[in-house]
Length: 229
Ligand code: OGA
Ligand code: MN
Image (cartoon, rainbow, N blue to C red):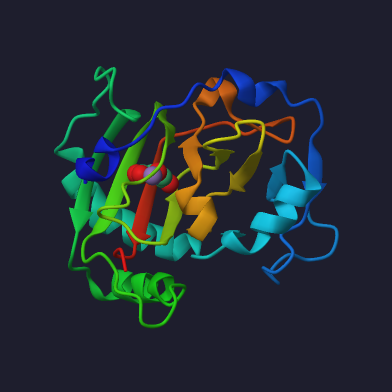
């Protein structure tokens, strides 16, 4: 799965933090948030949130604690055999180990088919599911997944830890969205959000959402992608 990141672009983050105003918004169309809940997505402007609202989603409690346990029991033995990689300065990911999985036990199959049902009908999914295990000190630098290997939609289940995902417009770094990814949530990036914005997972020291600290623990993500059309 390294291939996905070979074409990744590392962008200069310096400008991201200069934005003086943080507008708040609920995810307009997720239908899953109760009135008065804290927002899961904040961004550099209301206009951007409105424009991108339908292309970025965070679905909280997408899996239960029990289902998280099912996934961990299936994934841990393989992951434990690998060592975290830290020192490749040119890698888009720091402090990680990863694997892919094609076939799953019964409990996990049910979870994976729920994830797959999020994709547009008729879109073909990349066969193997990508598993990325980030150490507590690990993080993902800004990048765009290779358009050669991956289509219009990326979904990720977050296990073991809350985290913050940042999207930054590739050709206009003052335009950004921050997504709070609670443990056991599913995020979905589609279309422009996937093609025209870099995405990254913040390191523990920088892990703030809307001014609130979001401590980062070890985090495993289960990532499904569709194929290019
Ligand atoms: C990736 C990536 C995000 C995640 O592997 O390309 O962006 O949720 N992962 O782990
Ligand atoms: Mn990516």
